[in-house]
Length: 248
Image (cartoon, rainbow, N blue to C red; front, side, top):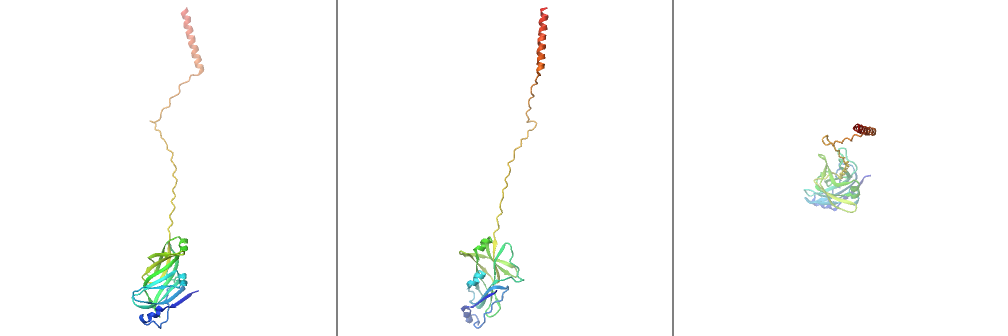
C-alpha cells in the first residue's frame, strides 16, 4: 500500500512574492524515476545560494531512514520536494552492485519548480541513519551513500559519520544533485586464520665412511681340550725317553 503525505508549508507561500508568482499554484509532486512504497511532498522557498533545510516527519524518517535534506539553488525560487522510499528499481536502473555492498535502504529525492513537473537540480546534503543492529548483524565496517547516475550507474558518495545514539549511527553526505540513492554497508573482510604446521624433529643420521671405521680385533684361537691333553702327554713321553737313554 502506498502512503502519500503532502504538505504545503509557509515557506512556499513566502515564495509567492519573492519567488515569482507561485502563490496560487497547486502543489504538484516532482516526477520520480522509481515506484514508491512511501513518499512525502513539501513545497519550500529557496533564496539564491542559501542552504534550506527540510526536516522530515517522523513517519517518513522511519520509512526511509533519511533524517534531513539540505538544498541550495543558484537563483531564488519556490520548489516542490518529494522524498520516496523506493518499492522497486525500474528496469532501466541496474541493481546496486554486490558484493562488497549490502543494501540497507533505497530512496529517491526529486525537486521541481513549484506548480509544475519541471525538474530542478539543486546541490545539497543528505543526513541519514543506519540501525546499529543491522551494522552488527551484517558485519559492516563502513557505511556509504551511493547515487544512481545514468552515465556511471551506482557511484559512491563520500560519507561521514556525525553521531550515534543507543539505536542508530548517523551519517551525512554532500551531493551535487539529487536522484536515486542507496544506503549501503561494506562488509568487513574476514582475516584468514593462519595455521602453523608443527615441523617434526628430524633424527640425525650418522654416516661412517670406510676410513672412519675401527677394525674389530679377531678373537684368539681357542685350542680344543683334547689337543691340550695330547700335547702334554707327548711332552712327558719325550722327557721319559731322554732320561732312559741318559741312564744307559
